[in-house]
Image 1 (cartoon, one colour):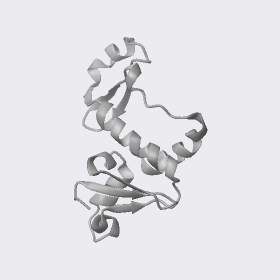
Image 2: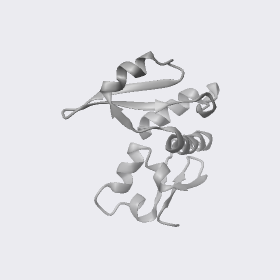
Image 3: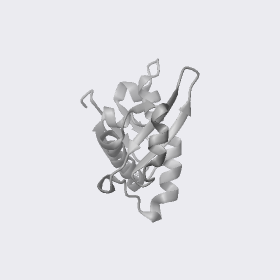
Length: 134
């Protein structure tokens, strides 16, 4: 397997080979691949998720690529009053306080760029996303 790809394996054994950059959207996966030590995930470039079904892992992989394409960079919170005046369905912002500075993480969503989630998989997807810190 190429070094710029990783393999994510579902509970049923289905393998998703995706760009490493996309997989790093997940804090959990990022920690697995960047932790010091000689872990099998790092050596083999693959992670098995025995609790995540194939359809859910597929949706998560789709989200990773969606996030890379549509998430925007952080801007100073001084602009947050402007963000607040925009329509909520067009612009979403989340303010995070850090000891050094206060940032407004801004994500711009156009109607055609919304990430669609089927209602019937919402609960299982939320549990997996919580585990993966995505």
